[in-house]
Amino acid sequence: MPCMQLFRDSIIEEVNKKGKITFAEFMKMALYHPKYGYYNSYRERVGRFGDFYTSPTVHRIFGELIAKQLEEMWRIMGGGLFTVVEMGANKGWLCHDIIQNIMKEYPEFYANFHYIIVESNPYARGKQRLLLESIHVTDEKVSWHTYSEDGFPFDRIQGCFLSNEFVDALPVHRLKVKNKVLKEIYVSYNDTGFFEIDDEASTEALKRYLDTYQIYLKEGQGYEVNLGAAEWLRHVSEKLQKGFVLTIDYGDTIDGLYRENGSDGTLRCFYKHTVNRDFYERPGEQDITAHVDFTNLMNAGKSAGLEVTGFTKQSHYLIALGILKRLNNTNKDIETILKVKNLFHPEGMGNVFKVLIQHKNIERPQLSSLRPLSSLTM
Ligand SMILES: C[S@@+](CC[C@H](N)C(=O)[O-])C[C@H]1O[C@@H](n2cnc3c(N)ncnc32)[C@H](O)[C@@H]1O
Image (cartoon, rainbow, N blue to C red):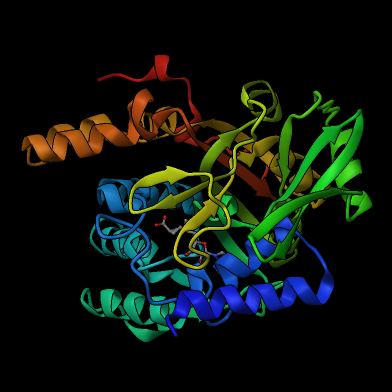
């Protein structure tokens, strides 16, 4: 029997056992089932032969600028041992580009540098190893760990927790208002296939979330809540003795999300570079993702001891870090120019992607990536 059918059957078994499961439980299975989940398979997910592009797969300039950012953080922290923890490195392009650039441009920083890749997918780990071997990264510079609901297994670090498009891949609960009553969307199954049921919210935390952010949904309006994001930041802060959290993802503050969030919510599936809302089709074969609520990340971070250093658009961030200068200095074939432009152009990844930087145990850090663009000279 093909894998997808076997996987469908195991989801159906789980649904039938419980009668119904929350959408978040369905999404968790579809993406993270240990054997068939989208992010645990050997499938090509990101890049030309996958389902979507991410910034590190667009051009290595992205990783080079993050390397520059990390070196600045290291200097602000006064030097010493600096550990980068990257969540969900996929094939390892970002860590490859970062490490290669640090080796070349910042030898003193490299001497004090360690990289932790947080990755549970064994196929991805294998690919990351190969890529790092190709640039002769020695074993003591990189280590691999996993992240679970219990947190991270390593000791506290000084350095930076880094993620690109990690938070948008965490399971979300789906809410809506029906006849003026708040409902959560559950998933059930009968002979005709999966279908949705509205019922009471599965946890008080969902109601608290709407109350905290004063979200009043209109009749029928859909809204997704990512409870795992705040949990993850609590775990991050537990392990961050001193340093930064750099989170890059698509989404907005709650105002932007709530205002721009039509009646359907922001949940989408990506399959071979097409977008759909057929959440129950191709389980394990397509990505399911929702926009990130950055207000929640800022608030959850504050409660966990992380202060906001700054929040901006990817366009601002990359321009302030010097992407235009770097573009001028690269090989100027038209393909490269278009790729790099896509990273910061407002109609490409520049506006929809945001950058949140938080810090802990550092007095008012001033990062050049957050300075006003009007202060830049070209
Ligand atoms: C959209 S992909 C982004 C990949 C990569 N960062 C990039 O920019 O190309 C989301 C990543 O988050 C990872 N992820 C989600 N939950 C995770 C967890 N608990 N531990 C480690 N990685 C996780 C997935 O495995 C996947 O690699």
